[in-house]
Image (cartoon, rainbow, N blue to C red):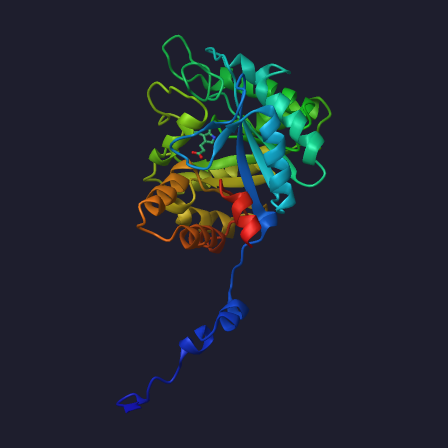
Length: 328
Ligand code: PBG
């Protein structure tokens, strides 16, 4: 065909999209099970797994089913597990989180014994699963989250999680100075080997909704005094610089899909591995729309994960980790 531009079109990008084999060959990003991390919930005092209604397909595990699901994930080639504990009784300071026999510590021990050679075992280092008010820290006498008193609790949590054998701790409470305090606490007990995956960029997101059910949280108020405002970008760069200076081994951006711009910038800025957390609400949206027949579930899952990968994540926390690893 000719036009006033000469032979037209002169370039034909469609040539590289002609067949599945060609598209596979030229794909710029691919997913690998090794970079997927499965978040898992272990709940104290239940005889059988409890379904999380807002996250169809995800359960609160018993000790027994947690072990089995960990083996299943490891066999599928999943690279890491992120454990969350849901204790039977919660109090103002989150005592269960620092009890050497607390449910999270039991889960860590079980999973490390079962699959610790095959996958990296990580644990959430935060108080909200353990407190009766649902905040990520302890409160002062005015009911405000007390940063520095919380840091002391985090240091203690780091010690008990390390004693339980965890490979990586994931501080997710967004307290100032948390990475440095946890690094010191670990080093002081000779646990230089335990790595820190810092929840560096963490926004106060509406998409955490289903997670509240997953950890039986009855949060009073919101987390806006410690998690970031979705309107802000530059602030994320500040959090990033601080966490790296304090000794973060890996950094995370969370949530994932609404913050791909921030993820790209973080990935371009750092020389440490970068994780992104595809959170509960991101999972729930896809599952709910698929259940209504509005989207193709399997394609949508791969598309979201590929996009997170494309935006620069080396590792992705996703509740679909085992399923996707099996499919890949
Ligand atoms: C805090 C924590 C949360 C999530 C992971 N760690 C809840 C929050 O910050 O409100 C959310 C994960 C998800 O929504 O899937 N311990």
